[in-house]
Figure 1: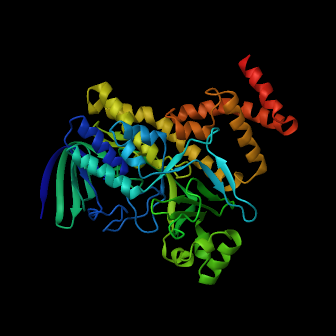
Figure 2 (figure 1 turned 135 degrees about the horizontal axis):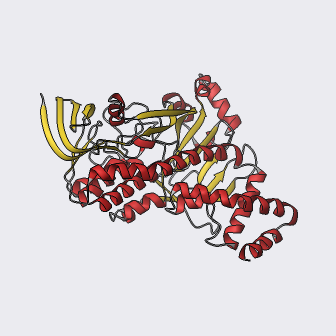
Figure 3 (figure 1 turned 180 degrees about the vertical axis):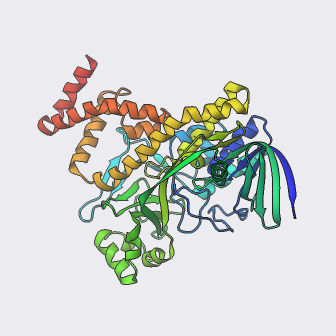
Length: 460
C-alpha cells in the first residue's frame, strides 16, 4: 500500500537529537513530523531497545539501546543548557547520577580518585540513554510534533523534498518543505545526499572496537563508587564503567578490534580478566557470558561537507559530524547543534535557505575541534591517567585554577562545564600550556612555592 503525507518540517531520526530538534521547532510554531526506522517503544520501556534490527554506526553513539550496544551517556553543561531552554533540565537531572571525577583502577595497589574540577564539586551526569530519549520524545509529541515509527528512509529527492520510506505496510511517501537528518552516524539522509553528489564524506575508523559488559548491583547497593567514572587504563586494552540508576554499571571495553576474537574460549576470557582486570570478575558473575554474547561495535569520526543542500535539506548531530565517545560530548555536541540552529533561525526570521548554510558555516570549526579533542582524550584515558607525571600535572593544574580563578581553566572544565565554543577552548588551552609546563617543572623541583611565584608573576 502506498500512502503520501505533506509536512512542513520532516525530521528523520527520533533519537536524542531528533526529538530535541522537534521540541525546539514545534516551540517556534513549525509543523513537525518525526520519522524513525525503529519500532515504537513499549509502554513503560525506558531501555531504548528496538523491535527492529539496527546496523552498526561509526561513531558509536546510537539513537536507542540494543543489548550490548549503548555507550552510556554523560550529560554535561552543553546538553543541560539546551534542556534548560525547553524546561526539561530539572526533570532529566532528577534521575541522573553525578560523577565528580575519574576512579583509576590499577592492576595492583589502591584506587586513585582524580576530581574533574579544582573544587571537587563539578560533575558530569550519567544518564540512561533510553529514558532520556523517552523524555524528549514525550516532550516533542506534547509540543505538537507527530511521530511515525517503523519508517526506514530508502529514497530522497533533495531538490523537491520528497521522501520514500519502507514500512511494514509497504512503501510510504512524504513531501516536506524542509528535511532535517538527525539519524545518527550511519545517517540515511547523509547517504542520500552523497548518492546525489551533494556532499563529500570521509569516515575515519578507529583501530579499536568496543564491547559492553555489566556489573550488577551488590545486593541493594552499587558494587563500585557511583560518584565516579571508573577507568582501567591498560594502554590499548582500556575499560571504563559508568553507573546506572538501577545500581548496575555498564562497562565498556575499548580494545584493538582483533583482540576480541582472540579470546575465543571461556577459560581464556576468564584468565584474561583475572590477569588484567583482577577486581572485576568478583563483581561480574556473568562476565564470560556477556563477553561471548555481546557484539563488537565500531568507532569512528564522520566528516562531511556541506551539511545542507538547496537550503531545504540539512544534517544535525552525528549525521553531520559523529565523533568517538572519549570526551562524553557526542550527545552534548548534538544538543548544542540544535541550540545553534535555533539561533540561526532567530537571526534569519526562519528563512531556512539562509539559516541552514549559516548553521554549517558556524558550527564546523567547533565540531572539528571536539572531534580532535575526543581522540586526544582517548590517549589520555588509556595511557596517561595512571602516570605519576600526569598526576603531578593535574595537581599543578588544579593549583593554578585555585590561584588564578577564571583566568586559568583546564581543558576538561572548559569542555564539560562551560559552553565556551570548542574551537575557542582549543585556542585558549594552547595559550595555557606553556604556563602549565613551566609550573609543573618548577613544582617538581621547588614544590608549592612555584605556584605562588607564577601567581604573582601572572598578576603583574
